Every structure is written in structure tokens, then in C-alpha cells.
Image (cartoon, rainbow, N blue to C red):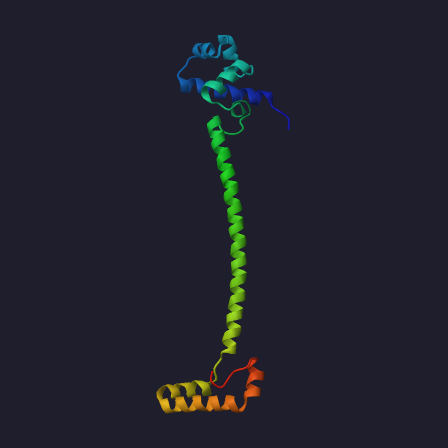
Length: 177
């Protein structure tokens, strides 16, 4: 990218003039402040020459002016702002990383949730109770004699068919359980 010297000189001249006006100096006072001739300062402010190292040093040291900003229009005007921007950029990068980690965690949790929902659906399907069993349970709730008779029949069945029950249930059960 080719540098346009005239444009650069005009930008610097404009910044010098604005700074001078902000500080309430006339050209003579500004030249004296920088330790240069009035004619030298006028050439700088009129865009005829680049400010010398003395001028740049005083701007940087006394007023915290960033030479990147002053000469090349890059970044903030003041170093303190530049430091703040660096801190903000670092914090932004950290926050972006945190957001990325949270998005990954969210994705993992959503996947785990889907797995749990599938497991729950499978278990609910296995727990499906037929209408006949539901009817029996309702009657057993209302008729205590039926309840006890069904339990006694169940215990007798387990005792009479112990091997079959153990085979189907996968473990040994005593009739007292």
C-alpha cells in the first residue's frame, strides 16, 4: 500500500491545530512549548513538514499522546486508552473462549438429555401396565380380601415354581421374600 505523503501531512497538521486549540495556545506558545522555532511549528501545522522528534516526544511524554495515533491514525489517541483497549481485548478473548466452552457444554448436556429421555422412554415402555392389571390393582385397593388372596396366590406360585422363577428373574428368591 503506497503512502500518500500529502494526506499524511494534512492529517498530522489538523491534529496539531486541534491539540493547540484544546490547550488554549497560540502558534508562538506552541512552538515554545515544543522547543522549536515559530516558523518550524507553522510548517508542521500547515502540513508542509512532519513534526520532529522533539515535538513527538513532548506529545508522548507530557500528554500521553500515542504516536501511532498522531502520525498514522492507528489506535486510540492516548496510551492509557490503548492499555485499556488491550485489557478489553484480552477480556473479550477470554469471554469468547468461555462462551465457546459453554456452548460445548450445552451441546454435551443436550446430547446427554436426549440419551436420558430415550432411556426413560424405554423404561416407561417396559413399565406399561395392561388394562387388565390396572383393573386388578383398582379392585385390590378397594377389596382387602382380594389383595391378600392375590398375594397368597403369588407366594404359592413362587414356591411351587421356584426353578422357573429363578431362571426368569435371574437370581434366587426365597418364598419368604
